[in-house]
Length: 103
Image 1 (cartoon, rainbow, N blue to C red):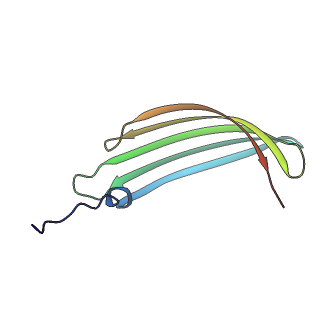
Image 2 (cartoon, rainbow, N blue to C red):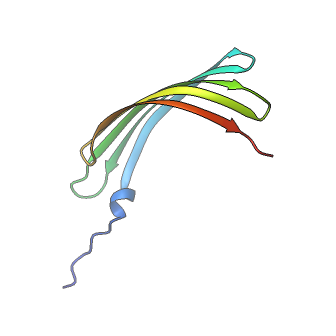
Image 3 (cartoon, helix red, strand yellow):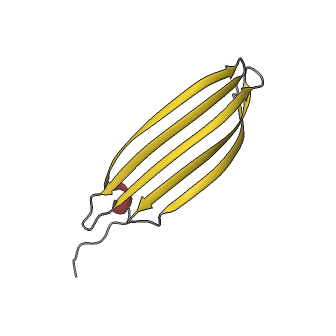
């Protein structure tokens, strides 16, 4: 038989995304910065019987410059995903990191 074959990657790439985001930073001290981010997105599947996935995320962090090339940060993130294609979820995360620029 010569029926149409399903393309597995089509489910990942045949969609219409949309959304918005915002970011704000504030210098608390010469080497200390507070950051906040929020974003919302909606992805609509274009395939027959398609679905919708919505994601909302907010995060905040405080970073401290240690040297001209190195900084550390600590932050938190909350995100919620609602989908009729994939499993929906809620997530809370604590983030800690080090950033170093190599020359």
